[in-house]
Image (cartoon, rainbow, N blue to C red; front, side):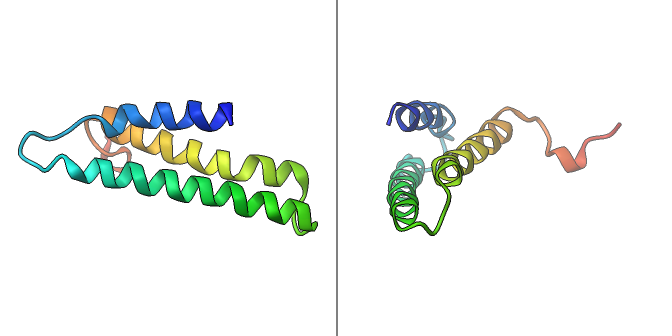
Length: 89
């Protein structure tokens, strides 16, 4: 649970930026959806580990790594001036 709190708190940083011309509710809906999916994924992986369908380490790391990857993409999108596929060498 401490890792969940840390990742969700870090996710609040890119979601807190709002375009003044756009609505403010979009990021709130994204944050709510991310929390619901993350919480559900943790529960599903926990039950899969309990049933023996998935190994302990995989069940422990997969949902957190997925959220960490999404968090990295959100930070990259927020901090990047241009997309990485359009950069010139």
